[in-house]
Amino acid sequence: MARRKRNQKQSDETLVDIVEVRDQAQGFMDANQNYIFGGLVALVLIVGGFLAYKNFYQKPKQQEAVEQMFRAQQRFEQDSFALALTNPGGGYMGFLDVIDNYGGTDAGNMAKYYAGVSYLHLGKYEAALDYLKDYSPAGEVTPVMKHGALGDAYSELGDFDAAMKQYKKAVSAGDNEVLTPYYLKKIGMLHERNGNMADAKASYERIKEEYPGSPVSRDIEKYIVRASQG
Image 1 (cartoon, rainbow, N blue to C red):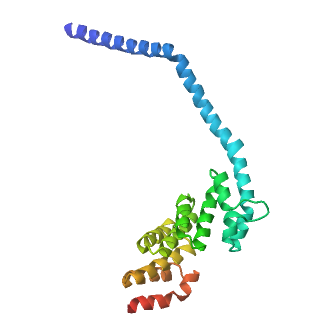
Image 2 (image 1 turned 30 degrees about the vertical axis):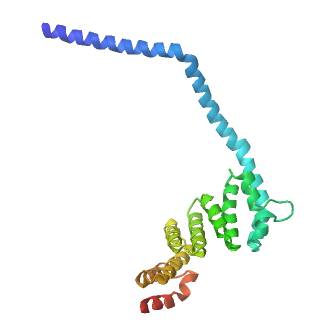
């Protein structure tokens, strides 16, 4: 009988606790409903504003950026890198202006890669590094391109350790029939420069075995022989 009373008392206390928590929660909602409602409205506005930004601002800006960058890309393909950067002609923007005016778009991001490679060809390696580092690649090919170009810039500056790191990142960033063996060869050549002939040979043999159809593999045998004799 005493046990039933204790159990009943515990049940009553639990019920009281539940009721108190419910009442406290209801009291909080009543006291702060304007604040909570305002927060929900703000959240809806933020989400709606983000969608509106993407659809009514960002997409048109992207289209504008693509149109503006068209002539600079032509100059780039013609190896007119200085013109591509600042004055491609026809009233169109160079890569630097596209970056300044459309930096938040995909085209503006791609302009950073173009600018970095342009500076690389112009021998302005520090500027090349700045723009290439700011470029955000996506997919399987552009990460390889970014790290490979960074490796070239570091190599031109004589920082061969940093160049090696970037070439290795380029190789591991994606498996491309043309670019991957190209940077594997550069890794091998840096190993040779450092006197690491076994590592150089391993890089060249990987090209021969994994990428036999690539342009780089056509004369890779002589590199294997040279590394073997070293």
